[in-house]
Length: 199
Image (cartoon, rainbow, N blue to C red; front, top):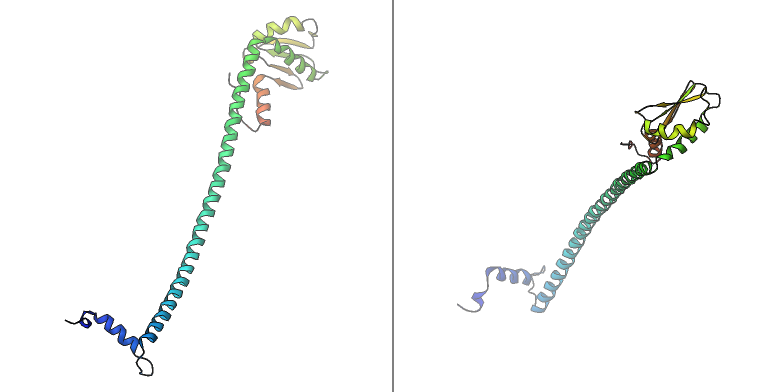
């Protein structure tokens, strides 16, 4: 077998194809090389253009996915902020409730301030009003108010349903609720919560 026989049929065909010109003339090896270079360049340019187009499409898709991820991340952070704010509010209310309960236990005479404030809010024209107090608070309030209360206008009534630290004034015109749970509800409503006072 000669050296020329080592070439494949494809290589023979390629050389024959390139050697034939439109005029039927045989091309020189330099012309064949130039034509091959031009074909390579054209194929490279075409491949580059296709790759660039495909890359742009893929890049746009990746950008779209990144935008969705960023939006989702932002939404998740917003939800986390709300949950965290609710948790901080709940914690603050728990601490406040414990502080109030501790203050009332350590200084039960604070009921006098609550009663005085409630009496100031009561209409002067109210007749036959009742001041409902927890029995333990009534024992503290009675000695201080017996001297200043008009017994015909207001009388102290012990009521175990009233939580220590609060009072309720009942009049014919309506009630003035200064009980601890009612005052607590006002505070938590201002803060945007619905947390109830727990004994």
